[in-house]
Image (cartoon, rainbow, N blue to C red):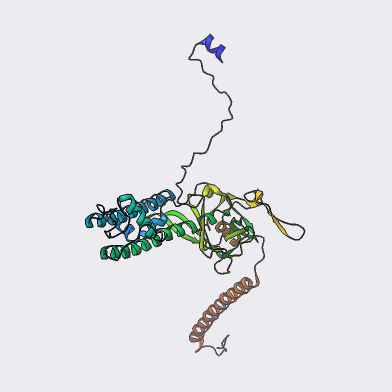
Length: 412
């Protein structure tokens, strides 16, 4: 190419003469996920205005929901400020009473013995707060304000300890990390099971501890427009995963395949392999249960977009029987393989099956109905002919009665 351009100039271009032109499908705009694969909801609240005060009214929950770095910062700052304020109050009492000027006078009785400056007042506060026990520094009986401050310090210390330590304990005992050991398959599949078209995905538990009362739910999030013209950008629709049969209650000791049967009540009733390429939706999966070891409720979430739904696939088996136990191979947890699946929607298949075949024989019910209809029409025709003949007979009799004595041809 470089040699050709040196010979013919820099404007030389190669024209493709191959007639086999390929056309690529238009690139579909990627849909913004409502729930990430790790379960995090992709929603940010803004322009709250005066509603931010509601966070302070529920301060405990606000602190628990904060990230760890902010929790630790608030924990350290709260204790540091409380200690400095209380130590300053002990120092102010000693300063007002003049104890700092008589620190080494054996005949003088101070409010707190052996408190000469702020460091010694701070050490006395730490001994009181940590209930180490009084030794070199102690409160005397001639200081009523010191006794009142001591009671106030005990109450305030108990409140601060209960609030901050309780917040840290709840923060550490949250079962969020337990949800990370609950697995969902990377993709969902659509294939036939028991002769019915089904949407399926797989869930698994990596720990040996069980999830008590595990229950699974599915939500379909899709934009739609109502007949009145209202546009719903994130309309939520429930997907039936066995509510009526109890299949949504899981015994999650091994990987399970969750199945949603596509029937006339399903929002995927008219979904075909071709229309799947043009659809935009998101399936949110919510798995809830009680952690066996702690008794706390745990929730794991994930989602599947239309690009993560594979038509005509099935999950590879992961269970195998060993000597005395069952083994789960999690290396094949996300693996699928293709299976023969009709590319039509359930609606199209039902319409196709409802059409009568030209070679099929009519059913007995149809034969009886058709014969009854023919018999009724024949009876009406015979009755009409009979009435015409009677009318004609009466006309002939009226004209020939005077001249003829013949009997009528027909008698009623």
